[in-house]
Length: 254
Image 1 (cartoon, rainbow, N blue to C red):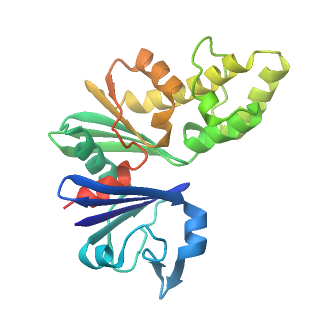
Image 2: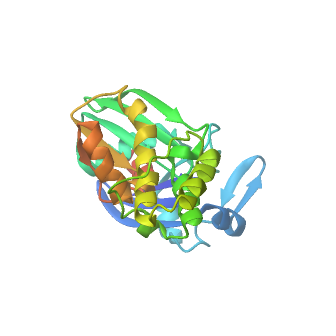
């Protein structure tokens, strides 16, 4: 039995697996999780996983724990093996899809990763963690400006209004300007979704393949997927659990 933990910028994700079978998935807001169940002891992160109610004492005693997380620095979780984010996400995508050759696009809360996988092995990757403009945080900010839910934002892809700012902060100002020009909310939502496609396409062009696997919370944005499918020229596959992909990769990684 294995436990995988992905301590993301927005959500902490958890997976319990036995062999290739997923027994349980869970997630909590990262900051709230740290505040309630985390502390630093002797320069190591200590998490009260039993107290959180996600895993039982028996499961924690029996399982091997592997963790990954957001940021450049490894998370030094007491008693756990640590692997890189890219390794976790590639392993999760392979486990969920059964594919050995694909390009991986992982769009998380504050960064975007694109990796090339050939014969089951990671051959190269590129990561955008300098700006949140192609991430879930950007979508949250734009939804707030438009005063719509993320579900509403993610449902529009027709007649997108042009939004060209490459920075998330400047993007907000540009969006406000387009609101003042009287464009309908549906077209503005479509424009926001198209900006994500514009920002990830240069990364995808570095690693062409027949199949694109998309993971992370942004994979649930149906409108963005529709717009991306029209431009990328690859078959798009979204695993059953895109948000928990990193945790699944940790739990499935030998």
